[in-house]
Length: 188
Image 1 (cartoon, helix red, strand yellow):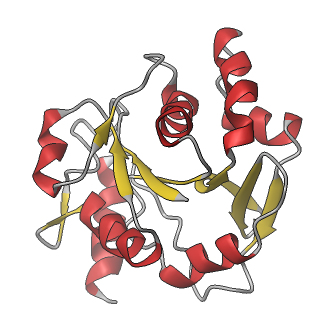
Image 2: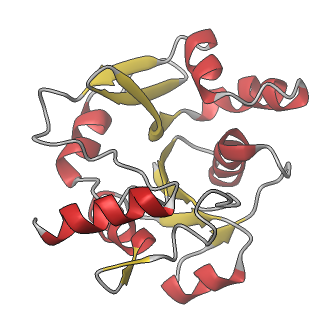
Image 3: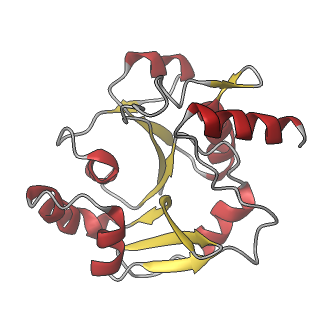
């Protein structure tokens, strides 16, 4: 299994690239890179943005462009040819424990996804190589919502509420969310 960080989004609400935005002087994506590198033999970034070359990881572009996160998951599966662990570039608080728990509870379903406090986290999960054709069909029909994929594919959803101490799934979409996370980060 390989890990892929999805960093191909437009970050329109943020106004700048989320993965490269610095939290305490460190690009947000770097936090994920460090944790994923402890868990997987190979970590790659799903993006076509040259700025991500600075991290020394292989960059994997979407094969089918402008399809959002589902297109990124498709690119990861198509490139890897095996199961992939996928995480969004704007989740700086992911932990080894949460990743390990998902990996150890991997199902035979097309995906094994985390949830926390009743909220499904489709960009923190394992997508099996067997999901590739299902995803290709979704992309061809322009059905891009990850929640629909999870329901229709009967993905396994694992509740991590009792497993992890705090919400590690705070992602960053706006400057206001970033300021809140930055404030909380300084108190950790």
